[in-house]
View 1 (cartoon, rainbow, N blue to C red):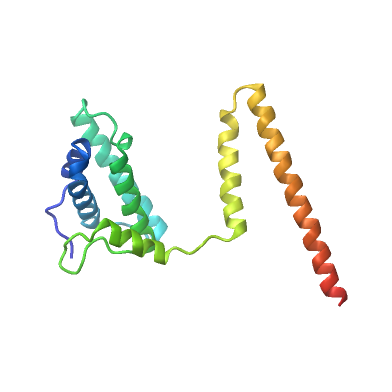
View 2 (view 1 turned 90 degrees about the vertical axis):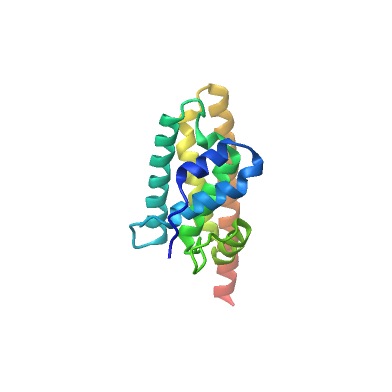
Length: 175
């Protein structure tokens, strides 16, 4: 059950106002997103759908309130948005059974309980993807040289670890 009294505009207005309105920001953003029909068979797909809706609403708000600037520049807005999207991805309800928005801290705690710790290789893949995306942003020779040294150091450490594990596995097979 969702409550349609929450609007994105009220959330954005609260974000633009002062820190004192963070509760209003949270209630309206979470309540508005909870009222959306999100398409997707996985949590990640529903998160992407919600993110698209939020971005469209934020763009519309910015266009109709040009003096405000970008909502993404407001820390409380970014925090609320991130919590809402994480809740959607892991399947945490934003509203209780009566349509009332649940507290941000309560939702954050439930998100943390549901999140599964990434394996070391999953974390390494994230780092690899991040490195690949920032490589093009290194524009000076000194930045590229420093990045290359860091990568070489990382590779050397991984090679030492690999060789150690090969030795350990070889010893266990021999035993």
